[in-house]
Image (tube, rainbow over all chains, first blue to last red; front, side, top):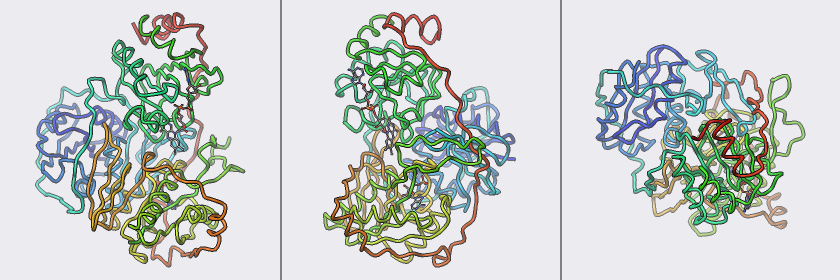
Length: 309
Length: 250
Ligand SMILES: Cc1cc2nc3c(=O)[nH]c(=O)nc-3n(C[C@H](O)[C@H](O)[C@H](O)COP(=O)(O)OP(=O)(O)OC[C@H]3O[C@@H](n4cnc5c(N)ncnc54)[C@H](O)[C@@H]3O)c2cc1C
Ligand SMILES: Nc1ncnc2c1ncn2[C@@H]1O[C@H](COP(=O)(O)O)[C@@H](O)[C@H]1O
């Protein structure tokens, strides 16, 4: 059996999600190669080659792949897929955009968001906002799969020395162009791979008050997340949303502040190791999943917490 | 231009769905069904394009047994002009849904096809992208803003780290994210009017598609339970527990 892992990267370095996906590929067994598609992405390919246990790295370096436009990258992956039984990618926003297009080009189903490999054709995945775990079986010879990164500990990033093979074919579908992006720069750890996450909800009342979380995040080296309500209200940007339809996180410590605990929010954080909830309503559903619940006004509790850690 | 909107009938988002004790499937007995929230946002966007004079006609399509006509009527009450039901068993998987939608596209020739980004039952997040490949159309997924301009559409997308804008040639696919718009409520007169709007029914054969299974469900189970937690009296106790019991901070 052979598996091609689609690397998530920024042309310079690999994202941690790639290492989680390689771990899922190892659970499948067999030979594993990595595809790095991008522009001026030699450094990312070199990083992929350093991952232990990789056969080879396929490098597709072309302007057509610079912004990971799905129309172009899907054609490339579908072509590369000819030599593999499984195509695995992390269930990140970028790969969610690309992979179903690959599956359709190959005329196979996609299995989204797997959390366990039962056998070569049988997988587990959460459905209904994680309220149910489905075991699903694929009848396709070639399998296109996305991996819930929080379900797999990443493999080491260093120690390997795989060969890098350049792919020369260029796929530019000519259907789409990249116009621009607004990406917030942050010195904090990434939300999906941070060891500690502190999230604020509607109870924070406004964006300014998220400063109360920042002081604590600084001390704990935490990422900051949010509920949908906080994002919808414009307190914080969309990429901070944790939940069924936002980011899935599973840190060692998750602190939910002024978040009621709707099923859609729980879907994104209930696999965290330790959950703390701070809410003034003692009946808030978030307390049902919290290891440590503090019934308190967040405007009093947060400054005190910051001073005591 | 014509706009096609795909709407799916799903369990209402407030329902906490459980696995049946025998693990054969989820228990959907007597649960409230509704239009998938992302599809509602898709309908709203299409109707706004019509109100702005950009779209000439909005067609709502749903794929499933007769019960999904209820969700088509909901879309018609929100302002869609006519409906199409593709009559197949419920639970058809995304690739097949995409093939059936491609069949509808071939008949209707829309310039824009708007879908939700994700069904809240299967949590697949696949159909729009698959349709893009099958129809050889560009896609603007997870959209928070859609601006049609001549034979192009600019789509602002919710991505990791923030927002990205892409420009697509029409015809194109858009899938909606939560911040695209806030759907209206259907008024009673519009609900009444919707009952009289045209609703055509096609079979899979009419669209030249064979319904088959690529991925089948073997069983379902409840997720791992979390151990019950405790309430702490104050911040001091919380810090003590995190340091000395959970050992997650030092
Ligand atoms: C299709 C769909 C997808 C969705 N996806 C997501 C998702 O991915 N992520 C997500 O989070 N939600 C999602 N939601 C929304 C979800 O259903 C809830 O509406 C949302 O999570 C509520 O956010 P909240 O807990 O911040 O707000 P609320 O439910 O309003 O809760 C605010 C909480 O703050 C507490 N509070 C207020 N003031 C204070 C104070 N001074 N001190 C302490 N506590 C205080 C209140 O007691 C309350 O419990 C989705 C919904 C739909 C329909
Ligand atoms: N049975 C269906 N009928 C109509 N539209 C559907 C159906 N299934 C999926 N869709 C569309 O595809 C979107 C994404 O669904 P999914 O890929 O299942 O997460 C939905 O929001 C709908 O717009």
